[in-house]
Image (cartoon, rainbow, N blue to C red; front, side, top):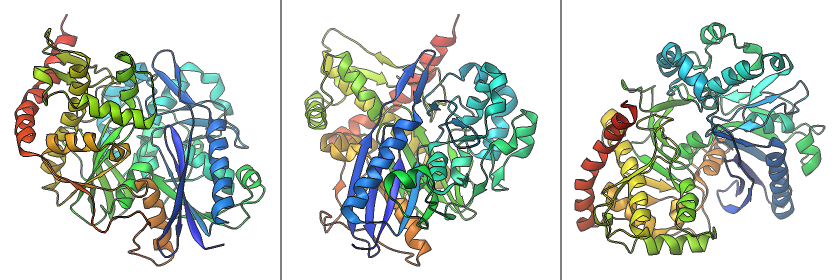
Length: 493
């Protein structure tokens, strides 16, 4: 069997594994989905045992196909929180980023915590933060807290069940709201002021820190991984996507559109926004990922389709649906959509934000409403790109990744709205690519390029078209005024 490295990404709705040889050739990718469970009062959670079962199955498939890996690198979604006991058993479900049961806690602590959280951790205070989720559990089940040995994300949970070690990285710690960007460790003063036990948080280490697989750990036993294989702690999926997209050390900008969406840039030092609209995560003392995050992207399309009577989730049917929706004229004949179905993070950071269609007339059919929502997603991303370039200057290139790269018509719509050429990054999942890049650097391959047999000689670039781009430039100005008007209406008595 060949020597290869394994990247494991634990996403919100699925886990992915990519195998890459040490000469940069992609062996292949594997993926396994798992459910998200909706609960009352904005609850969204997952069962850690289902995720671990999916991860174990993927590792076994990878070993069957490619043999034992020479190293494993980890990546995971941010803002999840799981309580575990002293032997690593879950005491709670995994509350994922979109779980908003901590909304009342967020409202109660916002005045006292918001500025400090942003200045020290680089993340906007929001109900999604594990900080708010811990405060929620403290309020809901105070007697139960004595049983909690560690508060962790799924990445730490998987790392422990591979290596027997609890540890988190700079970026995942930053995503909790309890990190100190200047000290690269937990914000002790904040934890003390909120009566959160520091010993219940895992040690913070660099993403390149390595621990070895321990044969007695459950994931090693269940998958056949031998003891001693190095496991790279890795980082958040967003930061590793920035690495995998080639952002580090450049003036490029990455746009990821998947279940949610994000816009990211690299900086050599922390960059914060005076109006607290962006995030800043640390990969190392010299590498920071600055960006915006959006709740409403591909994840709201199944809801949109069901709303108008389409029940088939098949990916090919999704592409056909997008093609049909985009047969409606650009601008949806005067209909505009604010797409905040799941509240919104950047640029408004309002968990109570809601969606709206405005300009409805009797000429509008279902396709107009659906096209308007796709356009609204694009307008929101356009706002973020303008904000990022306001903070960091014009970007050199615009790199597009995520599930959107499987839908040509949707990519063209986005290019038209942004009025920028989009270079498609689609051969390997960007987060997995970032984990592989970290492993490669550990082995002295500083500039390894990941290649695949399906890779094109020239990158696929989607260019904007002048006529719709001009129309969307005018509509963008109207869209930018829409949320403040709706917010004013919502808050009026």
